[in-house]
Image (cartoon, rainbow over all chains, first blue to last red; front, top):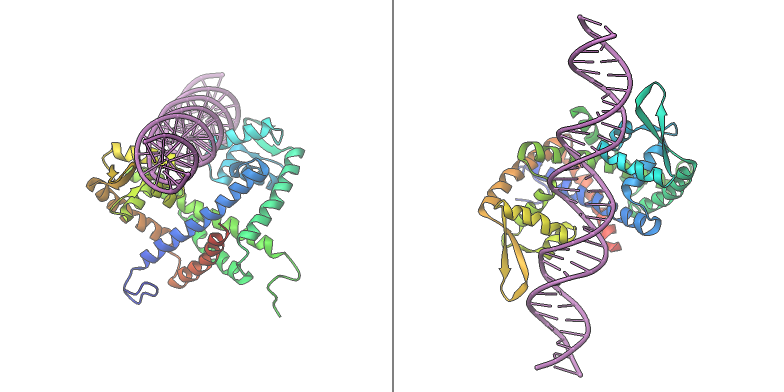
Length: 156
Length: 156
DNA sequence: TGTATATATTTTAAGTTTGAAATTTTAGGC
DNA sequence: GCCTAAAATTTCAAACTTAAAATATATACA
């Protein structure tokens, strides 16, 4: 009946579905802009940026499996990306003492420098895209997302 | 009073970046779950679901170009997916009277039935994943997203 | 009419991503 | 020590994605 507020008409599940679609649209829009900026201004891609970002957060390096788990992408995926970054001298693999199965991926000095540049631009792009969100908006949004995220981690 | 920009402490851009990363994590988590459900319970994929969903919204069909624009993916992409759906009898292409270049993609009766089943499950999955969001949460979230989306459409 | 331009779609090549299988190594039980 | 299960990673095939080229048709207009 009433499209906006539902006293007892539309089930809440419909409202959840609509907000999910809106969430998806928003994120896809921002992501598309980030991808475009990375491609056009820095000749790189979002997955590469994500890997570099993860490695930058862990200066001692991450095992390949830790990296894929952290980024929530497949093992085979990070293998390929780290291969490419390694070829370009931005990352390297270090053997793990005591476990010859494992390798730790790390950024090189060159990789760290490159990431610093990218990260600065990235923050500015996001700042521009989310420009219209007030501090209150951000805090409320953050809390709401926490609710969903804690549900997710509880399900695993 | 409380100014719009923080005069001390962390710059607002950092808060925006953090909430963006959280937004991304949330959406990726939900999407991964949807993909998993589609694969394990219905032997299909999210891109296929998206195409079927778009076609279900337009019973008279969509031209291939309209479909790709609506889904914001490339022309060649939808060609491949509609090909597959057509092979399986879920979709079909219909010539457009008066324009022999164009074709309209539509769901078949079988495709509509299949989509109804998928859509029901999909709504239930989303409902479960966003279970902890109250009606107020949803409305606030929706308004916040509108702010970002209107910024996006203004930039194009 | 004829011709240039625009539109609609498919094809192609290259790259990404995934899930699963395969490989190698480690750890634990007997 | 030997054997099996688990763990870490890579390889593989299939699906997805894109941008650009190719094909076919339509439209504008001199």
